[in-house]
Amino acid sequence: MLTLLAVIALTVIDRVIKTFAFDAATPQPIIGAALSFHPAVNPLGPFGIPMTNSWVLALGGIAIGMFSIVVLHGTARPYRFGAVLVLIGGASNLLDRFRYGYVIDTFRFSPGLIFNTADLYIVFGVFIIVGMYIREWRNEHLYGSTSVLSSDRRS
Image (cartoon, rainbow, N blue to C red; front, side, top):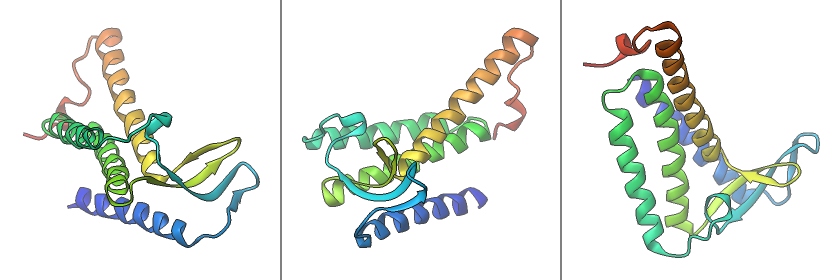
């Protein structure tokens, strides 16, 4: 139940911020000149890769679905939390792409990195997943123990 509430809360936060982006006329500083609320549209894909074909969107949806099946079922809670963040972020950006034809970016980090909360979810989710893999590898190879997360797995 807590997971469902977290998913709903994170999704609402992302959608509300993107909705405010439509109403904002000019960029607003958050942390001096370093970080600002800077609404923008991103007609390109991640890292500036053109996404003009609908098959790319379909492929993204399939990838998100496969990722959810692989990571969410039978993995430890920290992995699931990271996966949920990646899924929320990916689904939100995919929704923007289907609904508007572009992704709504909302923040600008000087000197030019523009992103949104969904992008942050993806990055933090990947960091959590990679960090847990590194932690497990280290414990297994340096200390000879099995998975530190095995007792946290659902049956």
